[in-house]
Image 1: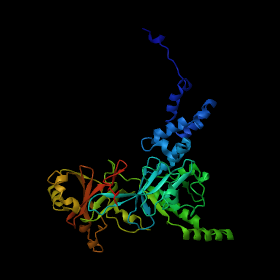
Image 2: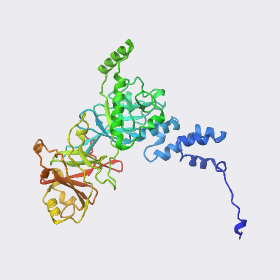
Image 3: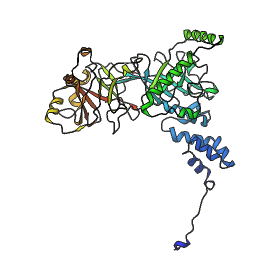
Length: 456
């Protein structure tokens, strides 16, 4: 047996590893890291710059569990191009809400498809259940020539069947689809416009692959784009500034006749377009967390037949606000939240006898379709197990038609929020005799209780 002073270590350099091991190691790096590594040796330049095995490994490691990497662009495009494109698409994934126009379906959900990104409108069903309707309306992908294509279905009737293996001919096969541009204004605002109506660039052009990143000057460097990732507390002001600059640049008058001709051509194009532009704002915090158990997108019944979506957020001054999602899409909406409270301290169970009486004396609003089966769905006698409770003294009125406009005194504004052991919660006001129970719209990136609309 060798003595400690006789043990010799063998040092290995990166070049001593087999090439497949080198590629595996490099696949953990970012493109900027790859560029820096390529500068260390001439032999690594071609490996890092153009080797399809490396860029496929990078794509597959980052998104292989979410989409089918080898099907994008019909398997005929550069994986380096695919990586850069998917890196931009990645920011779209998740929930967005429509802004600037009233809509009965303001919630938008972007998700990975096998060879594309799919955008869907999500809205409450009218079946008297907690089911929601997810209606795809936007498809984004890459053709076999490496061109970015985005197709929108204005009427929501086109389905991307399993027989469609690429997006090359989708716009030809489906004549009802409208080519559109998808444009980022910062990181949390997206504008979707009919192709050619706004920027003078097509998303299909080599100069504008992926999303167009818009700034006040019209051109944005990467470091300037990254500067837009500001803290959550300053997002609203920065977002409104970006939106203002975006529309101001589109309409700013020029000092010569070319500007007038451009505006005239714009009016002519607007007269021919099939679809009006839509603005979407990202819902960054769409799910509850241990520190913020009420945060996120929820659904609940305000009466026995009407399912609604709610957005609960924690604001910059430490309060909790709950708003109806349909109210948030209105321009400069001044509608009051359903509730707002500065108190965020929960009282753990068991509750006092007085608080138990407040809860037990109220009726839970249940959809008619589930009322008969409630005893089977919820096992306990009380049907729900309370984990903790929060007292709120909201200065806003609850949005119920028969109470709209009625005077509210401080006692009527007082209410309770009950969090249940299953992670959901309910709320109610002392002026009422009912509790509105809310469920999560999505969990782990998947929409819960999606209705089957294949037969519609």
